[in-house]
Structure formats: structure tokens, C-alpha cells
Length: 172
Image (cartoon, rainbow, N blue to C red; front, top):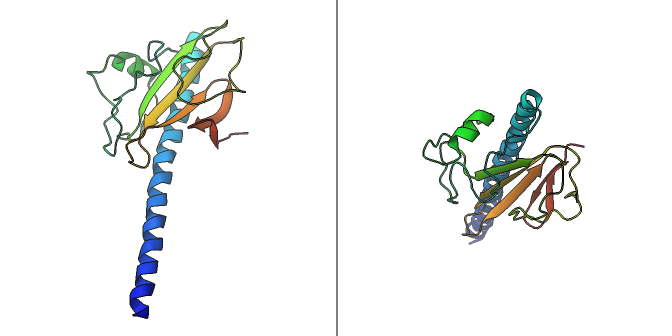
């Protein structure tokens, strides 16, 4: 009887640890992709003196797909309306991705403080942009519970935020 109980406890702990590992790996994909898109934006700006508005000003136009779930999708989606702009930006993508990504950009000046962000950036969103800027948003279902999880990165902060403004990472 004791062996059965101990085996059950070990199985429960192992399952919990495995599930946590899966969640962390999905978060790592997202933060890695946001950093890759940010680096691609910086390369684009170095050549063109501006960032590329890849998603046509719409943070809910996710590439390669807006469908969220456990299925990974190939980054190259020639049928997507934003395909040519993503190809022009050319972020480094190691393989199929589970999240959908959008990226808007603009020049100096006053910008709508709510361009479709799904994460609260109160405190870091500038009232007025003094330089060109970009915002990257990712959507996916990290824990496969049917609810979307959002991540946001931007040119005006080194942090990546998730659901409700919880900081995920910081380069400082």
C-alpha cells in the first residue's frame, strides 16, 4: 500500500513539473521571437531610418495565423495579407511557431494610446513619441485552456510584458 501511495505522489509531482516545463518552453519561444522581431526592426531602421509597420497598423492581424492552440505553424504563410511585409522585415525564425505575431510602427508624434494592445502598458507607454517606434504583440494559448495569452514588446522599453502588465523579462 505504501509503495502505491509513494508512486502516486511521485507521478503527481512528475506530471506537475513536466507541465511547468512545457509552459516555460512556450514562453521562451515567444520572448525569443519578440526579440528576433525587435532585432529585425533595428536592422530595418538602420537601413531605412524608420521602422516597418508590418501589420498595417492593426495589432490584431497576427502572422502566421491568429488561431491559437497547441499546433505549431510554419512561419512562411504566403496566403496571409501581411506575408510580403514580414518577408521584407525578415526576422530570424528557427522553425514553426505556436504563437501569432503582429507588429505596428510609426514615426515621431502623438500616437493613439490604445492601438489594440491586449496587455496593460500603463507607466511605460509614452504620451508622445520623440523618435520612430514599434510595438510587437504575440497571442497564443500557453496552457491550452482555451484562453489566449498575450505578450508585448516595444522599442521604448527593454521589457516584455504578459497578460495584465506582468513583466516577463528585462535586459537591463
